[in-house]
Image 1 (cartoon, rainbow, N blue to C red):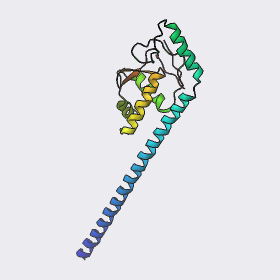
Image 2 (cartoon, helix red, strand yellow; image 1 turned 120 degrees about the vertical axis):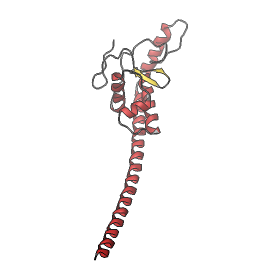
Image 3 (cartoon, rainbow, N blue to C red; image 1 turned 90 degrees about the horizontal axis):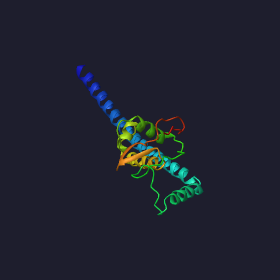
Length: 174
């Protein structure tokens, strides 16, 4: 009788092992599918941001560049916001949503500049190359938009002149 109980126990253990192995395999497959879906979502999000930026009227950008060139009698080239030598604060910053908004809020509350990888981790995203590169592109776009500055290559912080952050992208400027 003890032998038959041990045999039944062996079968039950083997069945549980097989079930665990199958569930682990399914979880790995789901994690791979989730990671791929997240990468696709990230690419689509970046594409939307870029298309939205491209939709901005070109006349406004051309007029701004013309004013800057006229302000410098020797025809000095335009200096991008957030780079060394840039002093003016943009009057109108684009509205922030999603990860762009989260990144600005995070950097506004940070005491020190952060790298893209640090921002990804702080926002609870997976620390994978695709996420980090997507965030780096997003942060560089925020520099161009006047929300952030890149003090050293790869180190991002809130732009001077952004002294508060409000809702849908509005920020008080000093």
